[in-house]
Length: 80
Image 1 (cartoon, rainbow, N blue to C red):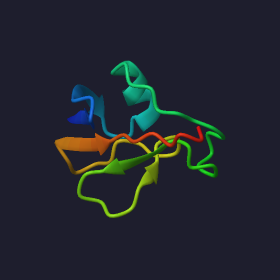
Image 2 (cartoon, rainbow, N blue to C red):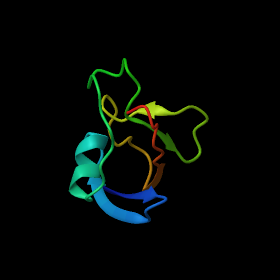
Image 3 (cartoon, one colour):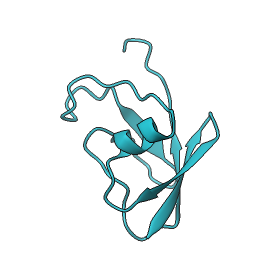
Image 4 (cartoon, rainbow, N blue to C red):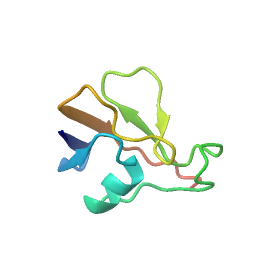
């Protein structure tokens, strides 16, 4: 089942599959998410998922099941 992923503030959308890594989805959409360790320890790749309280590390998370659309808020940490 395809999930429509929308990246803001760039307002870029792409279809993805449940379980597809978020970094891979972003790359396919032409979006660059900064990365550091690629293990979720450094938090360089944190993004906010609309409707979730806490940010997640996109390097260790995938498109979740149970949704047809997902909005991901990108923000840039100037230290990365």
